[in-house]
Length: 376
Image (tube, rainbow, N blue to C red; front, top):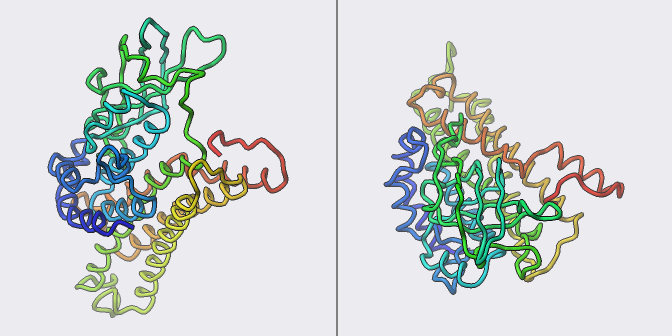
């Protein structure tokens, strides 16, 4: 655990919270929020140490992102997905292209595998490609993007991880969602873009796709801000029910005077703490692996189910908090409704899809293989 980085993250929270509404309104982290995160060195969480980054363990990553999420889940999401993108870049790109991407340890990276109309062809010296890649979180802050490009002239379906400067792309502002609106998860657009061959993981090269174990970085990076968002909501509700808020048409002067009101709050706390505990358990299990060590699929499905369960517990905790606060929590000026919407969207990231994970757990238990999840 890197205590210094956690303390740096904690100091940015007031800035993130003060600009959370603007972040949502402008569909990207507010400049003040991005600057605070950059000054704290948090865009370098998973930049390698030989490139002057922190390359923190997953436990630190989870703790830092949860702290940021208590102020602004959208900004925390961008920080987390930047960390995940850098892990993917380091695993799939090497040589001069990787050196260029990591020259600025604080540079933001984004990534997308959600493509439409994308294709590329090998040309002398590299790859030329066009297409659209949606849900590239952090796109408007990013310097680099990692996208999957299918080769049009390949004899069989072939995807090439490709590292491209965002300056060579255009951005279509397509992400206008009910929650996590401020994540700049827009669509990257390439029109006849050329990248040198050292920026592409062509088939047969030395690079490889991330292992199933490495993919846990992305899952933790997405869910930790949601646990933090519930903590932020919890602080708002605690202040409200301990103050002058009274249960409607009752003899109580405030909600905190009600034994069941206090119990309701402690139930929300329990779910929040349990969800965070699951995240840290998964982080520790993956951190404990030695380099290139593979985890049995029976263990991987358990950890995936832990994350899926934690996602559900975050939503359950939010519902309890909303019950306690009452309908005024949905006022547009109340941060509680933004936390609620962000958690509702973020905990439904496909890495946590409960029904496919449950199906795979049953398949593994009865050796009905293969699993339906390609990433398991």
